[in-house]
Image (tube, rainbow, N blue to C red; front, side):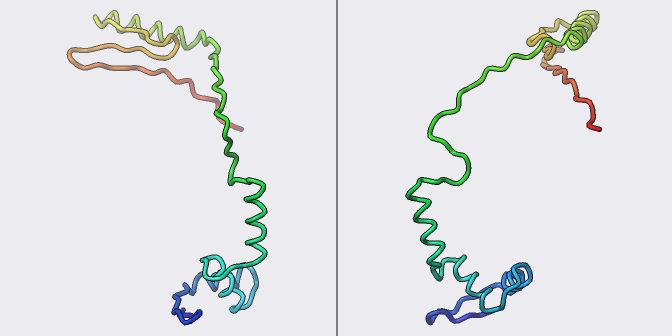
Length: 130
């Protein structure tokens, strides 16, 4: 839809106007006015006053903070079952003449076959939610 605003021809998408009319239950004129305010062609005094007040109080979008987050080091609980599986896999590779390296007990085995390097990462899946 072509709209003449202060001597400027503005192309307002019809679907935006229709959506505003349907969702917000407003007239076509109010929907056009809302679109012009949203796109910065007109200023809404209430919105400008609230924006200025928010800037005075330094309200930011989201939960950003100037302080760096404290890094928490997490300790993993030892999992005997996973450690046992890694040991079984390592022994199986040794039986085939491959020398494995357990880089993370209970999780990762690395080994080479010829010129190729491999890494096995054992992941325990969570039980499905009920």
